[in-house]
Image (cartoon, rainbow, N blue to C red; front, side):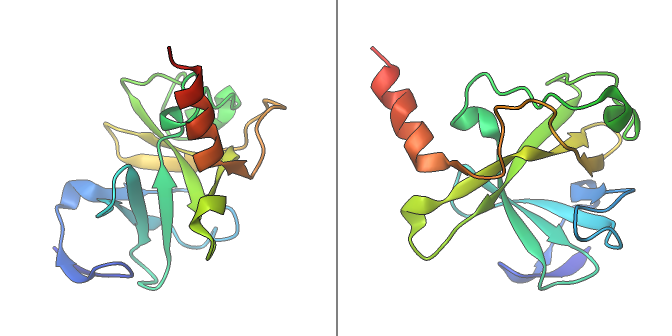
Length: 151
């Protein structure tokens, strides 16, 4: 199918890239249909709204900069997308990234992870109940700290 995207203009995508969010995303509850796209620059992804072509979110897998990241969300939130637990084999977990003009200050929201049921292609933005996770984690700083900690 052909879709209009914020990052790439009009492109052809596979139907399997569609993700349905029954509750929408926080602040965008009325928008339910999205595409999961690889970004040109790894390790990022785009979550592109199918309803509003100008709306797309940059995302990252949080384990890239926070190796032992577990979202710590309520079972009731996972049940909404037919998941029983945070299982890496049945789910995808992303954090929404904010990239300011000064790219080195890029942050990721670990408090509001995006969790997707891989098989059913339905997702939900959850709220982490883990007190260590905030809406702004400095990605490059945490990556540097990981690199410094490696022998």
